[in-house]
Image (cartoon, rainbow, N blue to C red; front, side):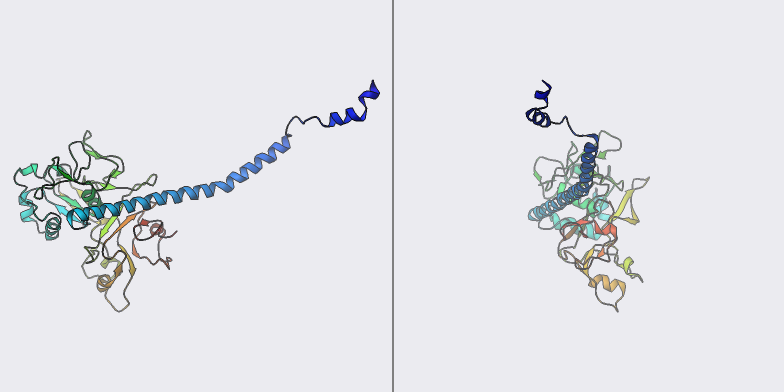
Length: 344
């Protein structure tokens, strides 16, 4: 019997029995390898996710460009990047702001500055921009939302403009636009009313701006218009410093003071400057340099997302062939004049 057990055949059968599993050391080696692989993959996955988010923002900027084109088809001009809209005939009559009146006339040549007939009915869609008879001052970011979205209806949704050529701000059923589907609405159930979704009111004047699709974004798209090739507006005061002379005037914040009056915050801007392709040579005053510069999108407009750091930087010179002058805040901006981030 013992001889049979120790026969070659039985020894071979015994050696071919399957092993019960991995040893502890083998399992630890496998776990270490998996952890190392995950460590190598995570940066790549994070990079892919980040690029996908950038692409989504760039696509939305393209959608905003298309909406601006649709607005121009409807009204013959592109949306401005600064305007003050007064709510009463008396305000329009006494305003020294000739630029705003001219801007409104270009968009709506038959605009009735008396809001007649109907008085406040003619300006009913401006009720929350801000409330009462307080004038509506819109900077570039706010113009982008106002002109592409229109005035809010009674439910708080941006609902385009009335097709009445004299009273485009009244609320009725015959509408032009909206030209872009802004994600959000006005919630009037709160006091004061607030904008929801990606609509926001960062300067507290009740006129909404719009932030991009990046997670945790806290700042809106900036919008600069070139006045149809005239120039990107900048301060016209002669200055001894280039940066002061070149400061853009269409991105100033306005807020509502305790008396309910819009007040300019002259030191608070989304961006100091638009972006330029080149600066003129030396030997010129800073103001003359600003007037002779060549901006990006010189005959149309610039749309700028502040990127994941929610900081715009200062703008100024952007040369795709030499980006060494850009700050990190400028570098992650996403715009309509460059694919991807300014510094990819």
